Amino acid sequence: MANSFANPFERSRYLGSVSLVSPAIVRVNLPFATEVAPSQYAGHRVTRGQVGEFVVIESYAAAVIGRIVEIQLPDRDRLSVEPERKEGDQVANPIGVVRLLGSVDLNFSRSSRGIAEVPRIGDYVYLAHPDFMRFVIAATQGKAVDPIVVGHLRGAPETGIALSPASLFGRHCAVLGSTGGGKSWSTARLIEQISVRKGKVILLDPTGEYHSLGDMAQHVHLGGQKSGPDDLRRFVSFPYRHLNEIDVFAILQPSPGVQAPKLRDALTSLKLVQIEPTLADADGYLIKLNAAKQPINRALLKHDTVIREPSANYDITKLSRQILNECVFPMGSSKLHYGAVHDFSHSGCVTLCMRVESAVISPHLAPIFSPPAYMEDLTDVIRSFMVDESTSVLRISLQYLAFEHHTRELVVNAIGRHLLGMARDGAFNKTPLVVALDEAHQFLSKTVGDDVNKVQLDAFGLIAKEGRKYGLTCLLATQRPRDIPEDVLSQVGMFVVHRLINERDQAVVVNASGVLDGSAAAFLANLRDGEALIVGGDSIMPLPIIMTPPLRQPRLPDVESKTWLHGVDK
View 1 (cartoon, one colour):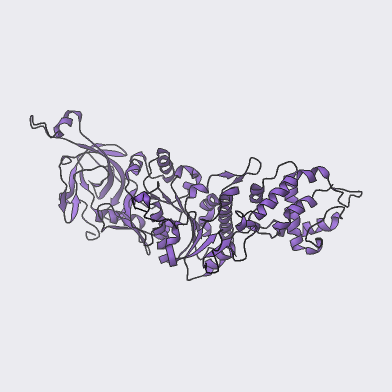
View 2 (tube, helix red, strand yellow):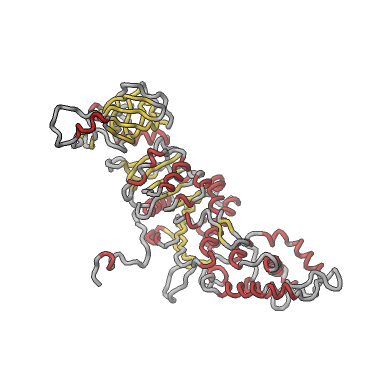
């Protein structure tokens, strides 16, 4: 047992003794905390008490792990550390406040978040050895298969911290941090590690910065256009038939009185003639003017299930005229027939038809309503990717997808809904899928559309709540945790938290993690670039580490690194 980890009670790492005990914290005498320079022992830096350091409290048959969150001098001693004061031989008596985090059973090599035995007055306190901390983490997780090295302890590059894939992605993962803190690097690192293990990950890349993944991934662009015949990039569309009715309503914004019912009827009619072309006229429209009701109603009953299925096909170019074809009296001279043109509804739908025509020819909505022939259907690309054993990462760039008409939000939400539908059908039972969503705050906890035609962007929230049992998990990256629904964050099992300055963001993480408290969250604002706090259900404590940089570092495409902003003459 002694060879499994460094001795946690080395005399050279002694800090002081316990002077006060409470259920969550202890106070420790730190007689050497005012020493100017730290010492070195066995190649490791040994401080005598610093805020943020992990400590080990020697208890009976166990080691209690804690973290120094505060150091102070009693008021009577506060002048003793003034270098210019030479009167008397007053000695400083610093006191440290240690937050208790967990305990390690040294006899059975097990660690847990609970405190088996509360420290006692007089117990010795030692600076935690990096190797012992690494052992503590491994003892919490048990024997991990093919663990992922995510980084190393601060100040000890040789102590790599490895977490099991299941602890990282088994119950969703969130990478949080303000701009410039290393959030994108950590996301890229995790995606690389999934690829190394031949896992499957679909990356939704709003800015295009993950193009640096290179040959590690398949790259497709949702939207955009080819620059010429030599352009070898793959472009994909998300055809309108994959949008549900409320998505279409959010884009076209029909009024609730006349337009909404006629739009709904027109969509149903176009789907019906796609199934039974004999009901349509020579131009492919379902004409209801003075038409018999029985054939139409019989066909609607027969094909009701197919019409209501996701991705039921229809021709959007015929929608505006079909809307006008719906503007008839429900009964004519006979109850068995539709009537003549209903002038009021016909005139009321003219503006809707104009919006439909404008949307169909809009270049911003081309990937949805009128994709060029060179664009592949994204849903087909996803299905092919899942059975392709040669590729582990599918990157979907949203760089060229427009913001107009809430196109980005609606399409990303629809992609999430499509993946959840695949998961419910068992597509990921044998090969679990991680869907990585960067800038997640743009696509969650939002409502788009007008007051009448609202769409709640809830697809990824549903994935977070129920996707895990179907083999579908999330990797959410965001710089604004406060904009992520709390019920979504509460489903996350692993947090990689980089620097967070905003107090609301810190509070959200504290509430969602169930492990962090105010004393630990106070460190978030001072984390260095690339440093993160690992917080997970399998971890004995929030763990500050320096994340390992990715092999392929994200960067925005088509942006020069040397410009006048960096003092370069032009």
